[in-house]
Length: 313
Image 1 (cartoon, helix red, strand yellow):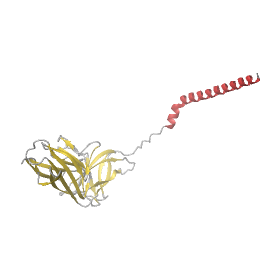
Image 2 (spheres, helix red, strand yellow; image 1 turned 180 degrees about the horizontal axis):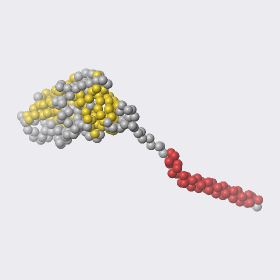
Image 3 (cartoon, one colour; image 1 turned 180 degrees about the vertical axis):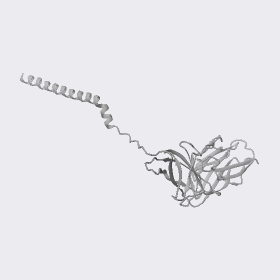
Image 4 (cartoon, one colour; image 1 turned 135 degrees about the vertical axis):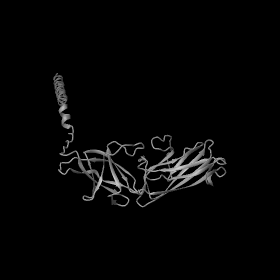
């Protein structure tokens, strides 16, 4: 009987403890629900304070322009033109005009222009009689200021340009030998009446210390009756695309993308196969460099080409 009473007492105490714990947990949950907006507000990161400037319009903006090829600061024969943010002055069909153009100030040793605080598109182009530098497009920003002279540095302050290298293109053509199973028949062009497969090895020699050929596309003629099967750029298999719309860039045909090329030699090997009845004509490779810049008035250089003949006997 004593044991039974003792057991009942222990059970009652255990139930009381569970009840206390449940009440405490419930109270915590209720408190959390009540104060959750305060907790969220406490934990939230406060937004950065908006900086208010005394001057934000008609600011004198200063910057410099560097020729990375020679390592010299440019003071003439270039034009820095500023456009609204989001405008692409490199576009193939662009017809807009700049908001303002910078001028070199010999007293300060900087280029200067007048702009409001904000973001802009800057295009620096070579205006020399004999041009050597690629045009450069940069997104820039103009800060406000509290200084009474209202002069502010452009961000970025230093604009970089680079000189164009000189490319030379040569080729070697080999027809497929059915007997040996190799491309070992040297040829001057494609004789489609005798052979059905060819390998062309193009060699691109890039000359000019610290100069580059900016990245672009190597275009190959989309020739009726001939198909590009495989291509290797500098020994690595590369994708071959087909561009059948010249309205956006003025170019069409098969193309292969290439990166910036510095001085040296690069190789493109392309395999072709006859897939129809090609007529006699000329096959052309075009080194369409600096694909980012499509506006013809800025593309002062001549895109290098290489050709060979296609015969039917």
